[in-house]
View 1: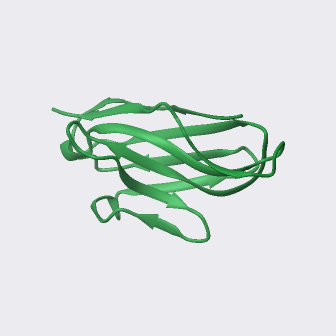
View 2: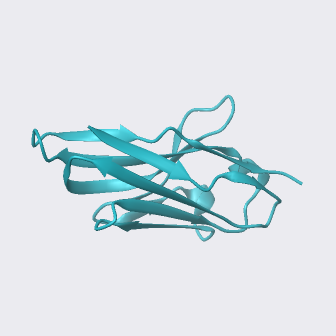
View 3: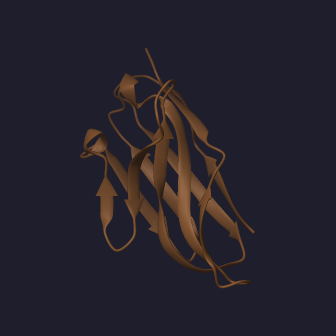
Length: 119
C-alpha cells in the first residue's frame, strides 16, 4: 500500500508565497509521475503541475509556480509565488507508482491541503 501526505497549506495574502510538500511512503519500486492537482469550491479537480519525462504546468500558474520532485526521498514539492485569490483551493498531491510487492502500477492521492489566498 502506498500513502501520500501533503503539508504546507495555509492562509496567505495576495502576492505572497507558499510551499507545499508531499511525501510518499509504502512499498514502491518505481516512480513514473508525481505532481499536484487542486480543487476549488464548486469546481472540478484540475491539474496544477506534474513531472514525468517532462514538466507540465497549467497555463494559469506558469511563471508563478515551480514543481520539483526527489525520487530518492519520494517527495514532490510545489513552490507557489505571487499567489492570487483564484489560487484558493484544496491541493492534492498525486503519484504514479509501481508496487514493490505486486509489480503493478497504480495512481495514488494525498488527502489534500487547503490553500486560501485572501486579504
